[in-house]
Length: 265
Image 1 (cartoon, rainbow, N blue to C red):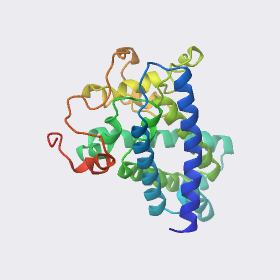
Image 2 (cartoon, rainbow, N blue to C red):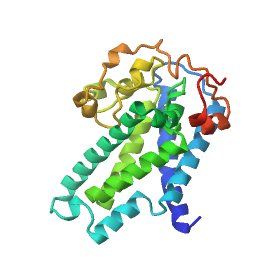
Image 3 (cartoon, one colour):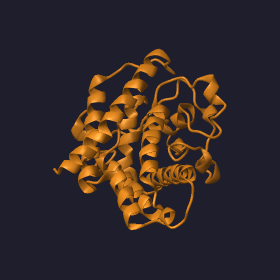
Image 4 (cartoon, rainbow, N blue to C red):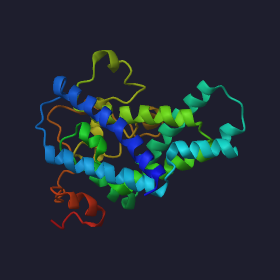
């Protein structure tokens, strides 16, 4: 592995560790509902996340920031041909990246092939901070490459890549956390994704899986008809794949899941 890939990997991991630690502390003191903490489950998802990050950084060793620097140097992308204030470029970049995240997520619930790699994320029966790490390595690579392509096409500035990466990391942990949404933030829920908004997406009822797909903004779900009111959620709601007979008790189960059938177990 090149030194660049190692640096990209370490740069990607330490903010995640910080965000997850803060999320876990919030769950301890302000839980939405009481849940047992399964440390083996945490170990599995941590390994999944590291493997996915490693594969992504090997596939594209310079990372998203490197792609942005390359685009700026060679004047690739829309924002390298028009003059806009940095704050406007930053705002536009965040909105565009958020839409791409929504679009990637939408395809995972519309394509059976891509659903098979996303199914690992939905197999979690205890939605909490660790669920933010629970992605098959193939999904991590899919999202990574999609965002890299957008950075090139739009010419997203390196500073915008850096800021949006931190923002989306924090929001991803926040929206999966088993925490009660503070009252002061509920007034923002019509615009921004909250745990209440996203949690219903993980309901064991398949009819909810294709809804509330947003990462940062709720507008995409509202515009494209994939929004359902969080009021349908209650503390007795169950999460996971419902009647699926698939087992996710070992790390091997997670990794080979895209090639399994629901009636194999």
